[in-house]
Length: 80
Image 1 (cartoon, rainbow, N blue to C red):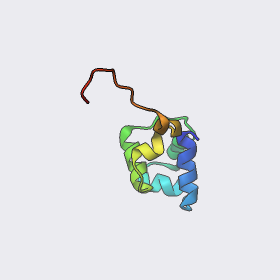
Image 2: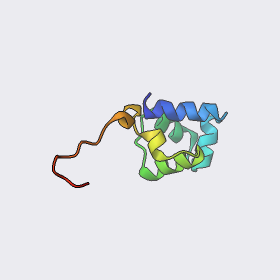
Image 3: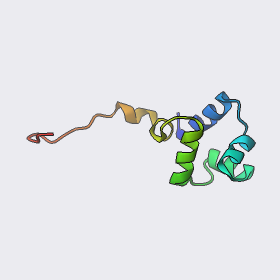
Image 4: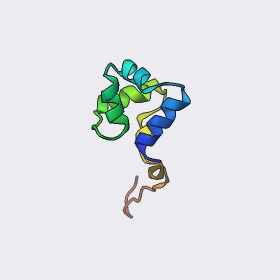
């Protein structure tokens, strides 16, 4: 699931409309609609504000699901 679908799913899961989200974020409904549909880039502050609304970390919402499956590969011979 991509991040935009995740935002839409979270919004609907909490019974919020796009107008509700726009109001909480202090933007117009049309601006929010553009964000949710990927037609407008999201600022870091907007991403943080959205994560606060849903009481989740930005990583939970905005990192791809498959990112969590990645492993850190360290070069051999390092102490950390």
